[in-house]
Length: 105
Image 1 (cartoon, rainbow, N blue to C red):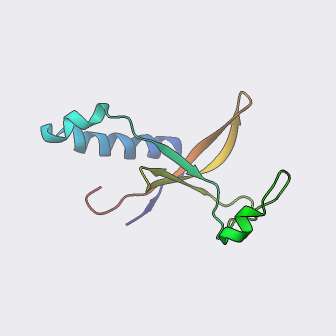
Image 2 (image 1 turned 90 degrees about the horizontal axis):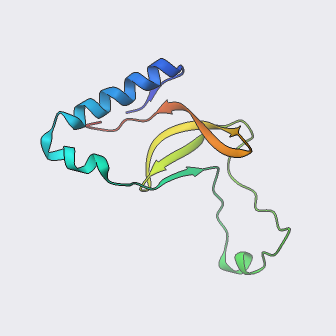
C-alpha cells in the first residue's frame, strides 16, 4: 500500500503517526535508538561483468530514471519514501515527496 504525501504538514503527520504506533508498543521502543542506513537511489542499470570491467574514468552509465522522476529512499534495502534531489549548502539532499507504507505500517 502506498500513499502520496505532497505537503510538509502531511509528511510530518505521517511520520509522527508511524512513530506514535511504534512508541506505543514498548517491545519496539528499544529499537528507536538503532542507527539505520538510508540510501537514496538515483537510478539503476544492469551491466554485464565484461561491461563493468571496461568502465574507466569518464565512462557514463545510463540509469533507468528520467530527469525529474522521483528517487527512491530505502532504509536497509526497504523502500520507505520517494523524493526529489535538492541542494542545501553545496550538498545534495532529498526532499521527501511521498512516504511509502506497507502492510502494518
